[in-house]
Image (cartoon, rainbow, N blue to C red; front, side):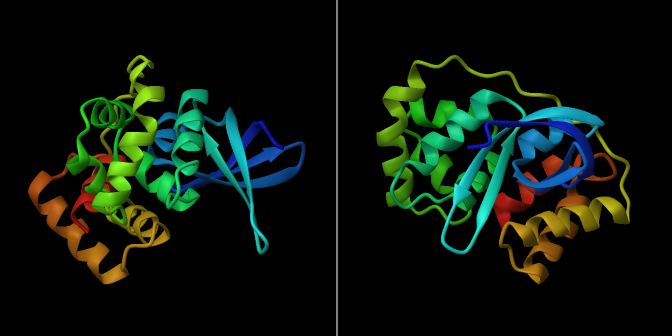
Amino acid sequence: MIAYLKGKLADKDPTYVLVDVGGIGYHVKITLNTYSQIKSLEQCKIFTHLHVKEDAHTLYGFFEESERKRFLQLISITGVGPSTGLMILSSLSPEEIHSAIVNSDVKTISGVKGIGQKTAQRIILELKDKMSKEELEGHAPSISLSMGNTLKSEALSALTTLGINKSVAEKTIDKIINETGEEVSLEDLIKLALKRA
């Protein structure tokens, strides 16, 4: 198993990074939380989980070991695959997830796209003991980006990668930009869109 990668960030996107390790480029799927922490870095260490299926070997990466641990806890639950795990960790901050588990807040968890009420209840039930003992994790503040087509296209690309219909994503992004004005970070834009799409 590949426990982590340490190298140059050859390409960064809200949904993946390309990590150049000794001339070999690794395509690693990431969460929005991880993206917000690495977007200004040129090199970093990414904790990884290699998910093996018959038709694909996929690397999932996290800036913090605690986030990888949370991801592994989520995908250990029946009905929660890696894509759903990434969606949860991209839609909710570590604090929101922790709080929802501790307070049995089914509404918050089921507010994530693709999570029904039964799955949300299962997640809370199975993770409550493990997560209530953890301390709340720190969360990196988001940096505002000036509004422009780049922000829109990056958000659209991330949302479609996460499985949101393109036209739905476009309408949602436009609506959020109109409401929030010029100052909205890419991560916040994607998070808000995920909650509404």
